[in-house]
Amino acid sequence: MPDRYDLPAGFRWGAATAAYQIEGAVGEDGRGPSVWDTFAARPGAVRDGHTGAVACDHYHRYPEDIALMKGLGLDGYRFSIAWPRVLPTGAGTVNPAGLAFYDRLVDALLEAGITPLPTLFHWDLPQALEDGGGWLNRDTAYRFAEYAAIVADRLGDRIPAWITLNEPFVHTVFGYALGTHAPGRALMFEALPAAHHQLLGHGLAASLLHERGLEVMLSNNLTPVEPASDSAEDKAAAEAYDALHNRLFTDPVLLGRYPDLSALGVPDDIHGAVHPGDLDLIHTPGLDGLGLNFYNPTRVAAPTEPGGLPFDLVDIPDVPHTAFGWPVVPDALRRLLLHLRDTYGKALPPLTITENGCSVAEDTDPDQPRIDFMAAHLDALAQAAAEGVDVRGYYTWSLLDNFEWAEGLFSQRFGLVHVDFETQRRTPRASYAWYRDLISVHRARYSV
Ligand code: BGC
Ligand code: BGC
Image 1 (tube, rainbow, N blue to C red):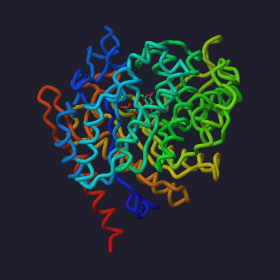
Image 2: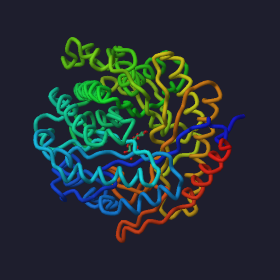
Image 3: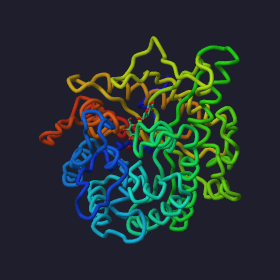
């Protein structure tokens, strides 16, 4: 059986973070407010009333964090750019100090021999754009493309590949359908225009990035969906969920069409959001790589209550669960990759795992569950590669403990490096040393 040491030559090792989760400095150097500042200030929205106002203070401590990355021997670092730092009101006047921060960050990464892999949107929409309807407003797609071009014009000379969006599924469903993330709208399936507008923004931005000679990726949170039983009802429910979670975000980009959403009561034009020509704008630029954020498979049963959602999400018993309560099923990653290859065939670009990791309780030392999680997922990845899937890299989530959205700062710790949020002291965990050694052994295997 192939294992992680058999991953192909040239495989890229990385770690990932996101702006609002680590930067802090929300009021500094002209940054405008984002939807997450507003949402986190709402009583009860985030566990323990935490916010990302300081988070890991990475805005000031990035040299120390890059030294930690260098210590791991990373090839690449995936981070996100805060749109409200660059354009405090989302459009119009550029904030030079915001761009200058990313300029310094990128130069320091290159200096350390690490390739920057920026994500242009990881959920921190400028509040001014939300005030105009946010991603429910078609104009936001055009504002996103303008912002992408501004950033690419500044940093594109040093960064070959770019990710447009992070997990439009999670942002649409948690942010606009359920309201458990910013901007806190609870529109159920009326939220889906927000998905279309993000994809449109992706397509418009992708064209502009390509015009500048840059490669474009999109990071989706994909989950293999399994029916709870062989019954026709459970299978239909699983299909409805798969369309919503996975195919809604991959079919338009890779195939130029939306899946059938009628089981969700959503019309083909997604409540009027899809205009003639939109699918071309989304599909034609193509993707140079598909980013996959993988955490867990999803088991789905037919709904027990009539008149509600057309599916129930059920637990997967008899497997370990992370501190977050997510089932750990590493082979599901291998199955997902083979499924993508079989479903999309030649339309599937090379794959990169742009997030994978798990939260571990703070007092778990050594953080062996994280090591076991990463090792097993990397083995599954190597097996998929041996079966012919083109997978180019792995970015673990996350370099540092950070602001875990609605879960706040303390409860879900995803870092290879522990962060004491009182003192900002960083302490590498056992998983840090483990990952460093894995990278160096794998690299040595292919060097002559
Ligand atoms: C999913 C994860 C996702 C998370 C977002 C969970 O329910 O299983 O894959 O990243 O929600 O916070
Ligand atoms: C997101 C990250 C998040 C992680 C763990 C993904 O859904 O992209 O921002 O911290 O999963 O929930």
